Amino acid sequence: MNLKEARDNFLKGFIKENPLFVTVLGTCPALAITTKVENALGMGLALLFVLVLSNLLVSLVTFRPKIRALVMPVRIPVYIVLIATLVVITEMVMEAFLQPLYVTLGVFIPLIVVNCIIFGRAEAYASDHKPVESMIDGAGMALGFTMSIVIMSIFRELIGAGTLTIWTQGEADVVLDLRFIFDFLGITPIDMFQKPVGAFVTFGLILAVIAAAQNAKAAQAQPAAEVKK
Amino acid sequence: MTNLLTIAFTAFFIENVLLYQFLGICSFIGVGKQRKTSLGMGLAVVVVIILAGMSTWAIYRFVMEPLDIGYMKTIVFILVIAALVQMMETIIKKLSPALYKALGIYLPLITTNCAVLGVAITNITKDYDFAEMLVYSAAIPLGYLFVMYIYAIIREKLELNPVPKAFKGTPIAMIVAAILAIIFSRFGGLI
Image (cartoon, rainbow over all chains, first blue to last red; front, top):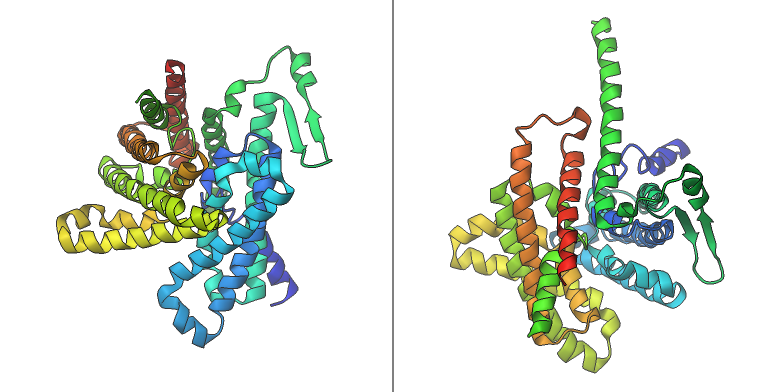
C-alpha cells in the first residue's frame, strides 16, 4: 500500500463515507451528547480509541487463514468480547482521569459497545484487510465522526446557549462566551436547541443541506452528460 | 406505589427512550417506516428488554456485587443480552413458527439496539430494587412501542405528501421526530 492509497483510506471517513452524515450510523450518541462541544470532543476521543484498536484486533484475528477459519463462524460473539473489553478500558480510564466528562456522557460510554459504526467497520472493513490499513480506516472513520458531532454541537451550543465550551476538564478552562453577539443583535439564545428537540432539528437540517448539495451537484452533472450524448 | 407510578410515567412519557434519551434511534429511523414492521420490532423489543432487564439485574445483584466485580458490567451485560436474544430466537422458532415469522427477523437486530443495554445499565446506575426495575424495564420499551407506532403512522401518511426534494427520507423523518419530541417534553409539566 503506497502513501496515496493510505491517505485516501484515511480521508474517506471525513466526507465521502462520513459515518454520521452519509451512512447515518451512530446516531444515538450524536443526538444525545451534542449539547456542548466538550462532550462531542470527549465522545470522539473515546470512539477513536475504541475504533482504532477494535479494527486492529478484528483484523488480527481474521488475518491468518487458519485462525480466520476458526473465528469466522462465531465472529459476532468474538467481536462483541473484543469491543466490550476495549470499552471497559475506556470507561475506567475516563472515570479516573476525566471524571466530570465521564459523568456527563453517562450511559453513552458503555453504549459504545453497541455503536453501529464499530460493528460496521469490523464487519465491512477490518475483517478482510491488513492490520495497518484497518487502523488507518478506523482512525479516519472515528475522526470523521468526531468532526460531524463537533459541527452539530457547535450549532446547538452556539444557538442554544450562546457559548462554546471547548474543554473544561482538570486545570483547563476554555470557554468561548459569545453571548455579546446575541446582546448586540438584541436577541436571546434559542433554548430549544439545547433540548432533545434541537437535536432532531439540527440533525434533520444538516442532512437536508447535504441532500440539497448532492441534488445540486447531480443536476449540474446531468446537463453536462446530455451534452456529451 | 406512587413511586412506581412516577417511574412508569416518567419512563413512558417524559424521559421517553426515543425522544428524550435517544436510545435505539437506528431502529427508529430504519424500521419506523411502516406500521407493520414498527409493531413487530416494538413487540420484540418489549419482550427482550423485560427479560434482559430481569436477568442482568439478577446477575449484578447476586453474582457481581458480592464478588465486587461491578466494573465488568458492560462486558457481562452485552454477553447476557446476546445470549438471551439467541436463546429466544431458538425457543420461539421451536414453539411458535407463526410468532417467529412475525418477530424473527427483528430479533438479531435487537442485540445491537442500544435501548436494551441502556436499560440494563440504567437499572444498575439508578440503584433500583426489584419492583422498580421491573416497572422501569416494562415502561421504557412500551414507550418505545408507542412512539414508534405513532411515528410509523405519520411517516406512512408522509409518503403521500409532497416533501421538498432535499428533505426526502431521513431529514423529514428527523423533523417529524422533533415535533413529537416537543409534544412529549410537555408531559414534564404533569409531575
